[in-house]
Length: 170
Image (tube, rainbow, N blue to C red; front, side, top):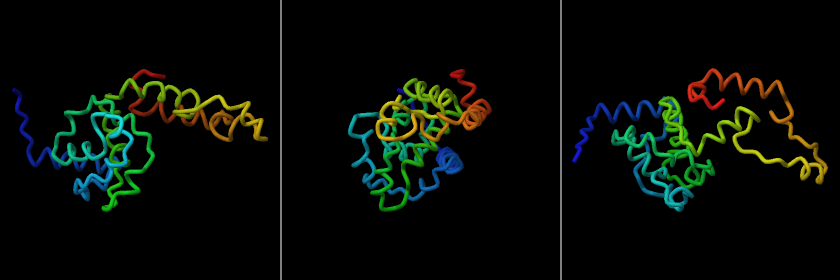
């Protein structure tokens, strides 16, 4: 059996890194479970929901789950943030952890298509809705990167100069 020694230095490093990546609320979490009670990830059986991820970070075990794809399944519904009594903003911690995963090139294969879509279309998730848009009196393309080549090029430039480029997806 492998034993993992976690020191207070490990815990502090994990917390500081997540705070630096946008998860400032992690220090306020008391593990009440309100976030997990409304989280679609928890209901679908993914390994890590926001409560579990926060606890792993707080205890310095954050790198042990770096390959887990659960965080990439978060749909940013923000239900967790709405019910949190301590203003932890669990979804921001999930996204901070995603940033850490991306920096370590541990992006889930489940997120690969959305990253490719982001580069090619400027949207991680999109649908071909031109006919439906026209049916309700809208232009076929929304006023986003789908209809603005300059904006799309800016998104592509940002992605090309980010750690995500090292993955070779685009």
